[in-house]
Length: 315
Image 1 (cartoon, rainbow, N blue to C red):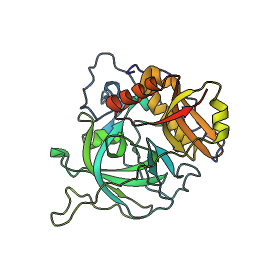
Image 2: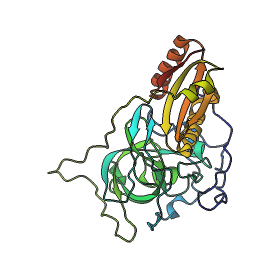
Image 3: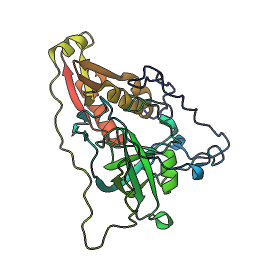
Image 4: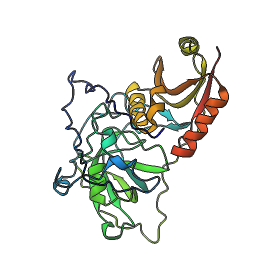
């Protein structure tokens, strides 16, 4: 289950342009460097990094510059992942959130994000479950020793994280600047930055007399039953599927599929996106034996903290 998946998805087309986005250079590999082991629940996996600093001058990378951009037509629709309902904001507004940030790196370099853009681990970007795509945030490190008070301005162009109660996923470059690459995660404050406005001042710690805002809460909901036409589509295979997400935008479903394919190894070959009208469901399967499906579901929960919903399809 932990084997790497070597495939890369096709280059996406940026919506509204009809042309593929600028190519993202491949992440360099270094055979003579031993990767830093991240803590369980922190950075994704050993081969996410770190990289040699002379491959890209990370210290010289500038923060993202907020600018007026139209919201993506599809990436801000409500969606369901791992049985939780997410409703992205559909306008730019003041936002402040405190919680744990994680990061993602070379395993996803060049793969499609929820915005349709390729992920660039050396860009100053981030993934967030509900902030508008695109939007801009200032992320400030808390409780980070010498890194406490450091901040970066990032462009949100992807969805996630969905596990371990994280509030934001940083690019490798942003995580390096905040000093959380080796630990895999760190406590941060996330604040919206509007185009044309000054970035909010960095907060090295929450005020002692106030209660810091709680991480964004989402209600757990059961995915709706499968429409009849979807059942007819998969009845020939039959069996049991583990449903991992439901989206109004197929790009979001495919982006999550690409992430999980890298994580699940051989099991990733069983991931499939099934569409019915404007609803796109990410499912894993099928298994003819319900006990086998439940065993896999338990393994996903134990090994990856990955919940799922069992979908039964009659033969």
